[in-house]
Image (tube, rainbow, N blue to C red; front, side, top):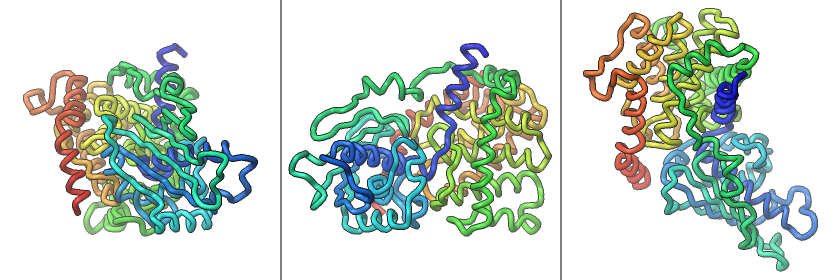
Length: 445
């Protein structure tokens, strides 16, 4: 394996990983869990068993506007509740920071009851931080009441920036324990410019030995389990379930409706607080679902072997990572625009298309779905996911027929890389005012 191939494998591992629950409130839970663990580590003597479940916490959470937007209306796994306060409370009561985006993987019923009581007692304060970072969380945890000690100043904080699981600073009792200078070397993979191109991604997906990329099949394990859960339960708006149950009457028993239903069902479950993890992409579980489930659905429907599926998933995930690098972690552009573009490429590959057809699928997606707004994470995201899958299949079919939106159309350029950069400019710079207006509308409801 060359150094460059090793770097790309490292990039995939850093951007495609399990996440339990919507990653914005989960980032809050992670910061709170880390701050709480710092208090535990600095308690005089040993903290008794169950201490966190009984402690009187006060928690201040300062977040960027985009974190607030994506954390307001999304379900928190296992709680039946939505929003940042319950995520923060669970982070204090039972969060394990070493688990990263799976920080809330094993709450007990007692943990959930205690967290809900903290929310009811208004022990969690959430406010918008004055920061230029689109992804920012500062969680300050105070220990009060009988569990506080006169011997120490019982409060700590943890700060997350730029990546959902990138803790850049921690402090206890006014003493900085770790700063971004010491964290940057090990934690800042998201800010590294890998200089990818669609052509390099395509070559990598086709040429890497299967044993070096077979790890990506974990995508199928996690996201297919979420899809099946969404179909068997009554989650959110039940978008996926509605599509699958109305195939003959409305949608037809074809691949398009199958892919839409399976992908939307996984999003239904995740956004409504299902306790199963998703395999995320670029810090988003919904993006991870959308970039992979249409490809997985194709493999199921047409009996694709594991090696071809793995190559298709590598292609789809890397295309999404590549496009997302020009948008930033959070923006006013819906993430399914990026993720469904990746899945369109994976479908093209499985249908026998080459680099030209993959590039055409990206161009077709950019000329079709660019502009879909992100108005926060919520159960309604499943409808946007279904729309993204529909556009992905349409764009792939057209590309395979030799149809590509020409450069005379809008934001499309002859060079697919320039088109990708145009999409990035629209989402990261052009829609800043839109992002602010969306948040204002959400906060004033």
